[in-house]
Image (cartoon, rainbow, N blue to C red; front, side):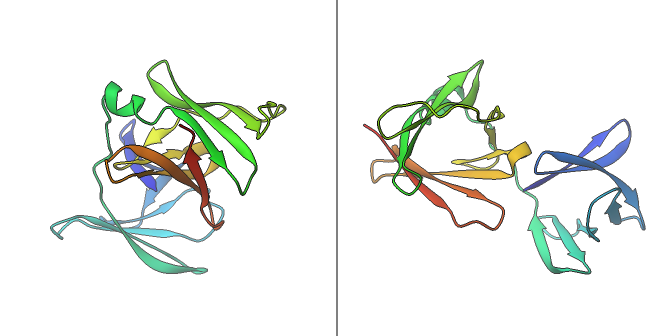
Length: 170
């Protein structure tokens, strides 16, 4: 996910927690200043759903449709809090609401022994329904629901790595 925002009358793009100023090439085409790869952004605002086209020398051109970011209520956010187990990683992640934001507050092994020495994890930032990002780490968390629409687990993905499954501990 990328966010394009206006700051101090300039456009900026935020990708994986990094912010780059956008330099205009034309009225609807921009390049991110200081981005570590060749990338051009072209905005097609004529479509019913506006699109940002992303292209570069070493990347396949893709269309990113504009989305409305989710803004879960306090009750909706609380439904994601809980303990989740990954058999693949042999860990338990504890997610809690801290100062109105969903956060990873503890990582422990299967026996409950905390994993220490880990860097601080940013708050989960809502993107779309049941999806959050941890921007500075480039992590996407997609929550899964059971047949009764209760949060049953999540898949965690980062960059090109395959999603890692977590199941809610009841």
